[in-house]
Image (cartoon, rainbow, N blue to C red; front, side):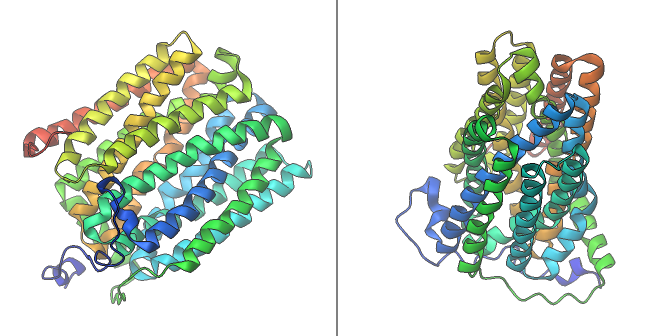
Length: 428
């Protein structure tokens, strides 16, 4: 008997956390009625701000040492390739063990990675090889942390508030993207990359404290099948759900589309607009600001049916933003264009995450979220490496324009699904 057969008569979605800690929160913040989610998000915003500071400093360090767009792309490749290769193992772990425990272990490993990078840089020993190897180590941790964390939200807020929790988490992620690079640009210019890495290391204590302070209502898991059988059942479960399958394909295209504008940020800031590290910080912050606005607007949505059109329109507007960025003659217009890209891509990703988690059974959540993380994070090494190589041969602007075509292709892929299923119950 397969795992899917055993689950046929079980409820599709847990909602044990919904009735806990009801507070007078507005609909756009309704997931915050749950104490565990409030505590976790507070720790996340501190830690993520440091992580974005480190990301900015890493890219700048590699570019400063080499002045190579290819090696900046290679940094992203090393950072994200392990997610593409190892996320299925993280998904198995998240469906067989405590998700909270897995997230705690991962955050502790992130802290170790940041301290090591800080020590090497501040001591003057750092080389590009060190940075690339530590980026790969970060990616290995991410492959286990992302599926466990994504699968943990439902146990903190319940199914009814899950879509809002996903949107608020994305808003927090991008608020940190806005805050981290803004502060990071200052510290980078004033004190160098090593201080940015050290600050990031200390921020992990905040998220670890929040994780030890919560007690999400995770069910006991008793899995009798072998890990290999467990992995196979998860992939088959995702493949047989047509909507999930198409959402994952569209997500892969969107993330390939966004790679050039992110990877080539230092090149646009320094070589095209001559704004240096501060300009790179402004571009990164503008992407984050657009994402915060987009996910905040999404958090106000209460109808899951509307998410289908949001995915479609967001992929299309992302393509428009990328075209403007690729052709922009001025730094200010580029900031506006990248803000539109941020608004669109993270709104699309949060809506996609909500749709997928609505369509799947909780016992498969870790494995399906591992496939989702492969499409969101795991596709980036391909996009990063291709972006760096393409920019070296055809130039940065044509590479970003090619990314716009991928975004429009994603809109077409999901648009065919929307038309087929006639998602008309609610406007986007």
